[in-house]
Length: 448
Ligand code: PEP
Ligand code: CO
Image (tube, rainbow, N blue to C red):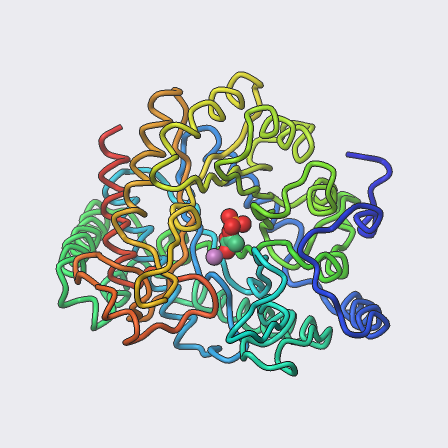
């Protein structure tokens, strides 16, 4: 680890995508008070996730990282969190049952409140205002007042993350994640669909397997893996004052951990090698991710590996490729070969969302389900060519019945997008599309 690193040493480097806070004094006061609040996760939990991700890097497990593009201060209910967990659990069961590969589950949840933007301002009818940067920073309404960057929001984000995490822990450890409840995870509006029925078959197969094990005399009651599930939290480490305030020294090892989430990632817009984000995450012990898009070079990717994982710890670094369906098969293989030849142990995941966003004729930002699947297929093909392991997927989804992405079995068309377009930022797959995607990914895993 860099001996000049400290939780605040990022301040000496250029930090992209930071809001212009109206009152920097108020920001400092908020960051100071955040630093006195309890950590949200523990270092030991982050280390356990690193160990799980090491299996992904070694080709022995598959990463399912999924959740909202941006969590909202307004849409914050137990039902919404439960339904998101349901779809993630359904997807992981489909993947594991069909492919026999263990699935490491990480939510974009309990802290995913800040968004990088392509432009610092948004112009509507000749009026320009600061862009919406996520509820950790400002509000989405197009008014002067709403778009002011308010440090008080860092505290609200912390408290909402704490409540969300509490519920995630309760659901996953308190019986909801029990494998005997696989049928109960199928939501009513999904169950009647083709994907829902296909899921019912998987759930019945699991039930039969559990009964079979019990009949063989295996004490399934005493097997904790069947009754609880690990779902880790993650978000983009964007607003560095917030991350700094939650970075604490682990009493066991003396190392620094960013205790705002188990895993943190660097976005495509903030992965500058000499920038503050790479520097900040280079110093924390958590598993970290880094997005890589079509403009990254093989040398840059290897340099990112060196910067973020100089000790070559397996599971420490996940590279999340987000190329676009039309570019993945040409852009990804040179990166895979470069990293493979460098000997860096990375987990590779595919974000098939952010390279496939476009504006539909209706004016809504959307993605087509076919492009999402095509990018995943291209990701698998690139790994086959390089002889490397397609380690996972990184998906924007919701458990709700929204109409934000085109296509899928229910054939969402542009004219349907307005029906339930509820996202705070990017368009998400709905529960049916997400389940369908899990079946397709399971097929790709089986074909290997
Ligand atoms: C995101 O994951 O929401 C995001 C903004 O991704 P990227 O940095 O890859 O554009
Ligand atoms: Co997004």
